[in-house]
Structure formats: C-alpha cells, structure tokens
Amino acid sequence: MKTTVMRVERFNAAHRLYRKDWSDEQNRKVFGLCANPNYHGHNYKLTVKVTGEIDAETGYVIDLGWLSNLVNNEVLEKFDHQNLNLDTKEFSNLNPTAENIAGVIYDLLRPHLDKKFDLQILLAETDRNIVQFPA
Ligand code: NI
Image (cartoon, rainbow, N blue to C red; front, side):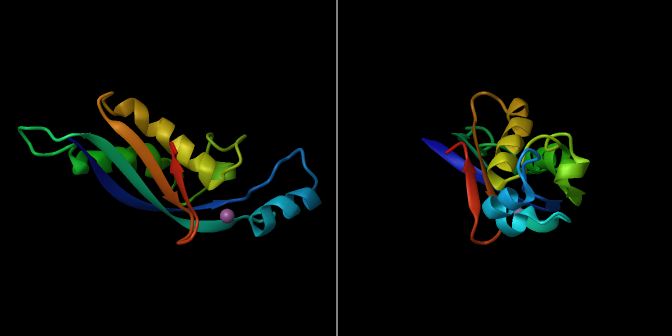
C-alpha cells in the first residue's frame, strides 16, 4: 500500500499580482488589493507531499530530513524574504499567484525526487486560501 508523508515549511515573501499589458484599473478590478503598486507580503505555508511505498528496510517512505534540506535548498533559499516579482527569475514574467507559485515549486523539486515517488504541493497563502498542485 502506498503512503503519503508530508513536510511543512514556511517562508515570507512579497508580491504584486498584475499584468503589464493591462491598465491599472483592470488590474485593480481583477486582482484587488493584491494589485497594489507597492507590493505586500504573505506568510506562506508550504506542504510538500510525497507518496510512495514504505521501504522495508528503513520503514520510511522518504527521509523527511533529506526532504526538508531539499526544500530549503531549492525553494526557501530562492524565495524566502524576497520580492517575488523583482528578486526572482521564476516570476519576472509570471504572475506570482499561489497557483503559479505552487507550480513553480513543483518544477523545482520534481527533478530531485526518484520517479517512484508522487509529488504534490500544497501552498497556503493565508489560512483560508490554499492551492494544491497537481490537482
Ligand atoms: Ni497577495
């Protein structure tokens, strides 16, 4: 039977949701306060879910210490305490919505995980707004 293990990490980052090709009015209409020109921050809660078989020798699906190091090296060092729009190449041309951030995090982590594992990213931008990728 497959089992899912999860590692929770947190990071803080600033962003602004907007499209350069839209007017200020259109951006404000669609993105609301998140379109404020001077940016704002979120305390993101990132849950990395790995699904696989339990290893008969170790009793682990995957070593969560190893997974924590991976997330720190590949994700938190890039995004923690950064302005996502201004400071990261990943979002220089990609609107940093929670949906897009979750997809980018998936792409950063997936190449480092053995193919035998399934990976899923949960990203909570607030207590009430949570994204899961892949669905
Ligand atoms: Ni926001």
